[in-house]
Image 1 (cartoon, rainbow, N blue to C red):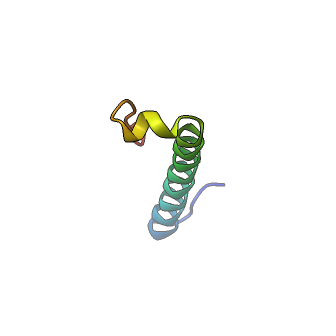
Image 2 (image 1 turned 45 degrees about the horizontal axis):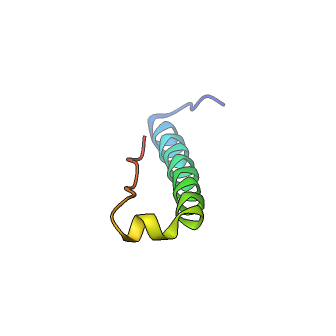
Image 3 (image 1 turned 90 degrees about the vertical axis):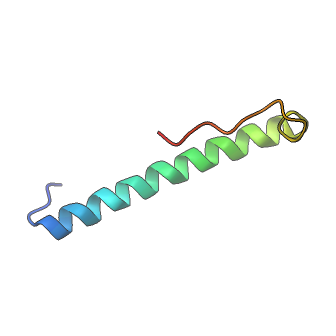
Length: 50
């Protein structure tokens, strides 16, 4: 869906970014659940949000 005005386009971009961050957080949470000890001992690091 194409935005017809600048504010609508900015709002759509913000919403898309929120979706990206949510997906990233879910991936990180799943990874931490699989390997909780490695993160706490310094073996794991969070990946940057793309």
